Length: 114
Length: 111
Image (cartoon, rainbow over all chains, first blue to last red; front, side, top):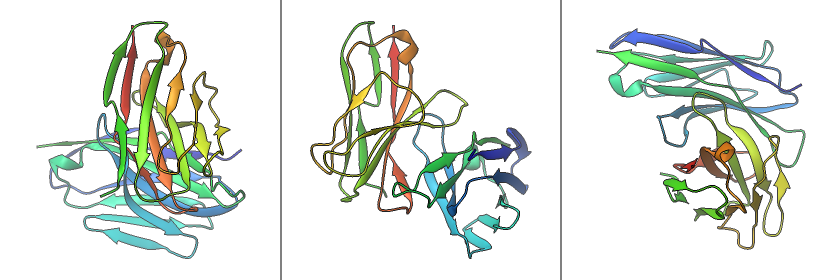
């Protein structure tokens, strides 16, 4: 069964600190993995998208890693800001169908305190 | 910024009413999706479309229906709203298997 598991479920950090969010998946055949940021009551916004051959991709203070062998990804946030408080969702797409189905994790709820 | 729009953003409606949630995108994407998301929970796919006149049900059973008469428009209809339909509904579109762009969502409350 294709699944995406994220950890931790929630995380509280102080402003300025770094943190790392984890994503493990069993989706096969793998197409790509995306990290989205979802503010409360809003739609998800893409942070990064990684294909099979990519190990690391950065977007400002966000750095995503992908290990396609172990089917693990992480999202590292450096020098956190209050505006980073949001849910971070890992989404994996398969290539076994014309749809390119998206499989969503439950998200990690990040809270940044001043 | 993604050009995908949902209306209304918020809707409070009585039980038994018929409602249509609107979703439009101006990017020319063939694929469009409707997701349902309860607070703190993951997104569940309820409908998707490959293109005009193509609609399919998703993973989560839903009493809603969709139509795709035009590429840019993918409305979702509930013939008779119930309190169990209270949720956030997110529309998304994508080109092939690349990045999906999401609308801001419609938060529906059925009283």
